[in-house]
Length: 269
Image (tube, rainbow, N blue to C red):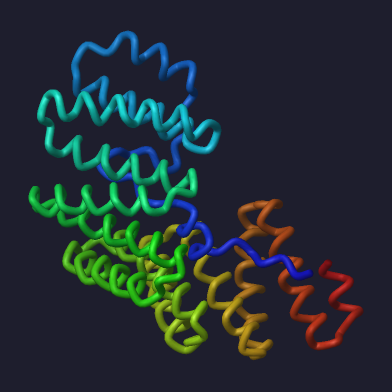
């Protein structure tokens, strides 16, 4: 069975944006955070550390993550820090999503959205719509998913920050690919690819190349699929990203197999 390469659509449906807390891409050491929690001198610092702990435990121990997330939320409510309240609600939504409780995740995302709209935090409002769209897509409500991703994109377009657009664009493209509107999916993915190159983010570029290649392969436009897969392969060779290279080779091998070119399929596999 062909292994699909990593794609931003797949990645983002597993990863919701954690708002008002710069944790994405950071690797927190739980022991250090728990020690820091004891030393926190302000409520604001304690909320931040609790949320960091919640994030650190998200995949390791979701129940523990929920416990820390609830503590952060309770403290934010106690001191009436409206921005932290909104962020904590979103964080709790992420944890419930990780636990597979999509109804609860949607409830918290929508509460977070309401709070951020009241605060006129447009970047966070955009991210909330993106997160809500993720839940609707997971639960099979494709029209609602599209509506929310489009709302996220519309707001992100006003922020003059290309990075804000890349996640919802790829998520929107993924929905169109899933419902069989491949041409629309490709156009959206290509827009995300252009923005990824504009901000020179190699990870985003790789995800987009993978997405576009996958849709062209699905359409049996194998020459075009090859061009995107080989561009991705070249990138990963330069980065010496051997984990990703393994997927690149399997994808290229899979296309050769569909072409019944078994010698090349075996060579790349």
